[in-house]
Length: 133
Image 1: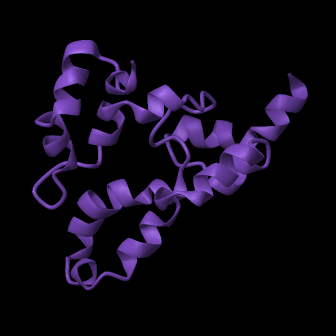
Image 2: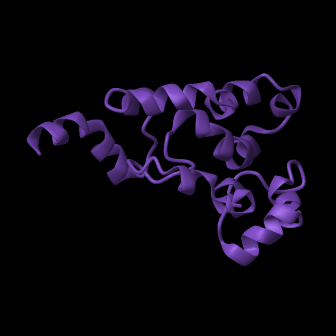
Image 3: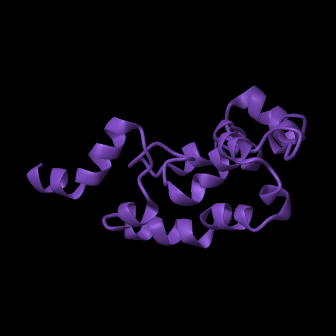
């Protein structure tokens, strides 16, 4: 336990303050998970947002409250799943995606909920149930 505590000293401090733990810190112990994360679009979400002309035209207070709240996913590993669980089912749960992918500027949650797949999920609570035979 002493060694585990030593490895997570930054994680523990961040957890107490409810702040982010950067993916590189997680990758010190969770190399495979970091490599998988870096292959996906979420790993570039913040950088891509910052180069958009629309973003640059929004007042900083609004950017921080709305844009950066979700696009900071690039800087944290526990946006789509609970820390240390690395649960594929948890990350694929439509409710996890809907935390960020909703609203008039990107209505993915609303589109999903009214789709056939969303309807099946509502009935079965299985986010991948529509793939089952």
